[in-house]
Length: 346
Image (cartoon, rainbow, N blue to C red):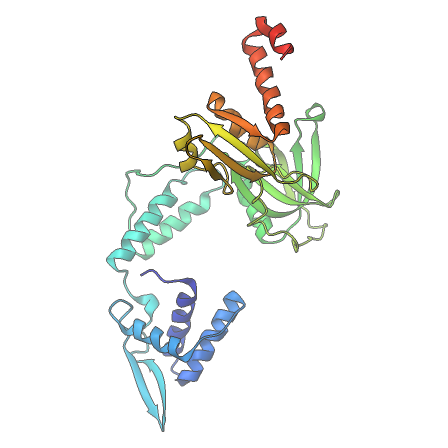
C-alpha cells in the first residue's frame, strides 16, 4: 500500500508500541513515540493527537493491516496494545498490489545482474524472492543503457563504500593530457554520478583543496588512504551542484550562466521540446522553433548541440555561436579538404 515516508515511520513506531507488553501506552505516549521516531529519521518531530487517531483508524482498516487492537481502560485513561502478542504489521502477507509492485522492482533490479561490481544485486534479488515467496519473471520487458565492457566499473563498489564510510582514497589516474602520464590523486570522495553511460567521482582534491572530477574508466589503481584524515563535505549540496550545467564538467567559479538561444528545424523541434536539453529550457516561439537555455557553457553542452547536426542553429550569444561555428568549420575541412581555401576566408 503506498504511503509517504512520515506515515510509514509513524506506523512502525505505533506497531512497536502495540507489541510491547511490558509498558502501557496511552495516547500521549503514542504521540511521543511517533515524534521521537520522526525526529530520529528526519530531524523534525511534531505529531498531532488527531493524526495518531487517523493512523490507528487506518491500521485497523482493511486498507491497512486490520490490526487486532485492544483499548484497555485504566481508570479514566485508555492504553493500547495488540490482542495477540505475536502480531505485527511486518508479519502480514503482501497484498496482490504489493506483490505486483515488488515483482516489478525485482524485474528492474535483475537488469543489472552480472555487471562488474554489482554482486550485491544478486543478493538483494535472492533475498526478496525468498522472503516474499516471489520469483521474478525470466522474460525481459525493460532495458537500460549500459556498457558491461566499460573500464572502471570494477571500482564502483569500492568507491561507493569509501564515500559512504568517509574514507580518503589514493587514486592512480591516467591523464590523457601531458603525454598520457599517470598522476596520483589523494581525494576525499563525496559523490558518484553517471552521465552518458560513464561514471564519475566527485571529491575534494587533498592537494589543490578544490572539487575534482574523476572518470572511473581512467582509474589505474585505487586504495584507501588510512593515514589521511577524511575531510567531510560541509559546503556543497550535490543534489543541486549540477543545476547550471549540461553534463558533469564543472566550469570555474568566474564563468557565469548565459542565455543560449537555439533554433531547430521543423522535424527536430518536437523531439527537443519533448526531451529538454536542460531543465531551464523554455520555448520562446512555437512558430520559429526557438528555445532558450540558462546554463554555463560546458564541453558536454557543445557535444549535445553538435549532435543535432544541421537541425540546429545557435542564435545567441554571439561568442558561443562563433565557438561552435569554428568547430563546424574544422569538421568541414576534414570532409571537404579541397575547399579549405574557401573555408579559410569565411
